[in-house]
Length: 227
Length: 227
DNA sequence: CGGAGATTTGAGATGAGTCAATCGTGGTGG
DNA sequence: CCACCACGATTGACTCATCTCAAATCTCCG
Image 1: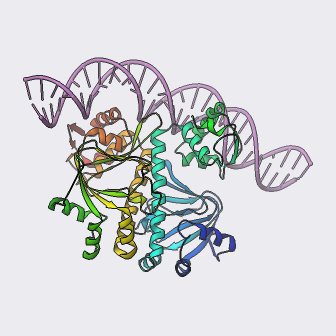
Image 2: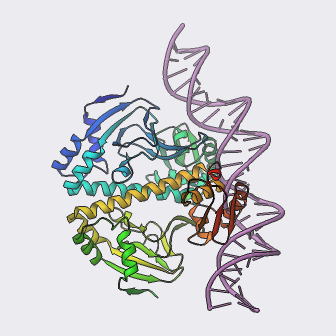
Image 3: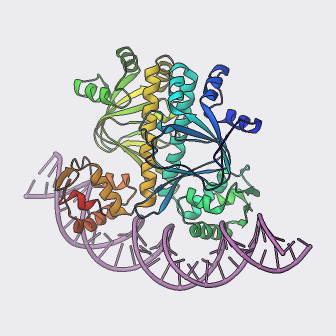
């Protein structure tokens, strides 16, 4: 199950477009790749648990990964959903050495796993690698700031509308988008119970949002912005 | 009001203990200091607004700074409260060039303001500066992850108990701590309305927490952990 | 000591979670 | 190709947490 494998062409293409690896010099890219190996994991497979010693960080090549925390009573709260191109746990490169949350695959997924110590060493020698780390950290910080602000400012239907709008290619008129994953994942991502997401969708029906399976149809994007 | 001034001894001591500046070589520290100036700002003074072009990032030397976002209808949500030693807006060093939130002083405060472009240049030449930036970003990312997880997993009294426990010097028995700022700031920090914080404190009374002004008394720290 | 601002308290409204039952759907195997 | 099964999604009923508004009280600063 937990098979290590060579980097195939598709994975390589995704990896090089990652915010972490894009823009690296050839030399740096080669060095970074030598600190990496590929994992192919089945659905719902634990990648690491909170508190474990952190020796690897990851980039998602395909599939989706759920980062979450547990409460004492066993309730789960999602912190971030990572899709192709996203990296996670790089925040531990220059900080604590224990993972701060649990990570598990939400689908069958391919991951690039980087050896932290090796990347630390490379980053201290290659400026562009250090810069890539900083860019990646900055991006995450900004996206999680959005998450806090959304949680605190908006209701469930508003957060769902925001999510839809952020993925609509157009500024006005009709749009049709497809969820890249199950609704229960989206619910966790928005900090909602699945039932709450469902109700949010049905609230949005009167704003011109129709949901059928993973397909979401918006009558008028401009109108949805008023929610 | 917005007076620039020289770095006095107390400010200098705080600045050098910042996660951003501690551990820098003498040479790097000198270069970084040359990219910095000190601001003395009165209470409730806007430092920057969301969307403005970002040319400076900051370290708090004394006082407190509130980072927050506004909803369309004008409601405010705090994202982070920064105290002495904390830095903010460094996440824009290698990312967007517009501030992602509003910042205002919550008290009369002294700030160190760093020129982003100059720090970027220095970081590309001095490894230890780049490393300091990464360490600072990592720390923030981890702390805001805690914030999301707390919001999503815990109720108001639990979040307040967590806050108190994190500041108790002892593991068990009685403890006495002092809030470093107004309760309304703490409320925003925990994602609560001031009324909700007040009610949370009164809920915690039966767990041995007594509040008088800014003084918080805990009968038995070990017991509070059960909340 | 006075007064502005902060905090507390009460009452009511609302958003979201939980539990349970039902519905739909996609995948599997006959 | 169809029937069935398992799991995800939806809906309803209810509970609980937190917000809002308003009034009363407290506290700290000048």
